[in-house]
Image 1 (tube, rainbow, N blue to C red):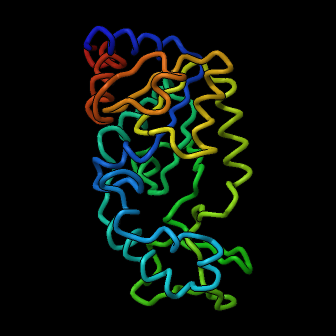
Image 2 (image 1 turned 180 degrees about the vertical axis):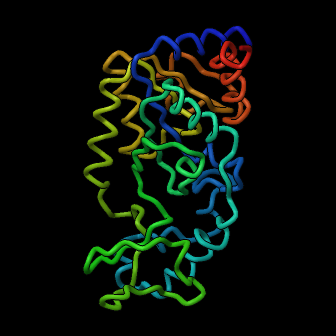
Length: 251
């Protein structure tokens, strides 16, 4: 495994444009459970509360569960080692773009700056009437549903609900970077959610080397992955960090 990690680090160092693509697995170690799978949130909550049509008709009911899931349960989540290594890679010029399926804002909190939020961000609330955007951390969510100061419209979390389209800018920027990258690093994504899962596939089709960091095989492993580094995101990225920056740290 050490030899494979070392070889992978060299591939990343030689890449002129590297893209990271992250899913729920990178945030599990920060205490945020995935939505799908054995321990997924949809085993506990009815996903209907995030269906756009249902929400539009029942916003007060939906906000009870939205607050519990995204603003009570996830409130104390902090970036973990995996988020920190990716941010360091960007700062050191080894990572040029990051596409995330996650809505937890942990990449930005870790210091990543070039982040395409494919599914939006739970830290923002938006008024669907006037377009005003609010910082969720500064809102009093003990009183729900939260309302726009200007027109008293109920605010919606600025992430993608079921039945809602992907932000055109996030979609276009993600695929533009996928098409020009030389290396794509998949971290913690099972490849089950579309159209996000097409991003690494677009990178592969355009000749990129696909590096996958996942504890288990995913839908990417046998179809697009060139190098599978098996393990948790934090463990593998910490190992990669040693080889990526070994010369700098030894000076």
